[in-house]
Image (cartoon, rainbow, N blue to C red):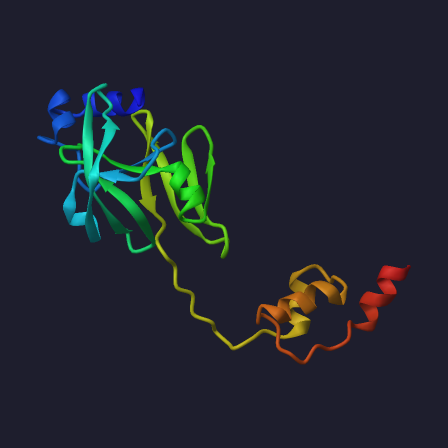
Length: 196
């Protein structure tokens, strides 16, 4: 929480940020290992929302307020957060590491200046947090579309690319549709060279 206070106080308008009067950007989400829930003070993020009984929430400045709504947020076109709390006048948007790990089926890895969010099932990266003024600021990963030149490459070409391995690694390439299904036998020269 102390780092969130430092982040807010170092913004141009200082403590005005704490009550939502001025923000570096209202679309910034901070990855917070201390937050019990995802939270925002911006109703525009919600794709669905419902009323909840007032639920106490501690603010970075030590004061308490109440979450009065909850809902789903589709963040950066990559991930949906469910049960995000709406906390009026909350000046920052918080991504809870606990909720990422439990509800969103994500793996979160931290280093000194970056954290990476990865889907546990597909193992694909979802986003990252870059250290900025003592907090990790969420950034979605841009997706890259790759166009295949041909439907699949030949066994012989991949055999050479991979340093002339046995057939097992190449059989695996077939299962992920990189090598064509007609697997040829390893060249005699490779077999003789490996046995000498």
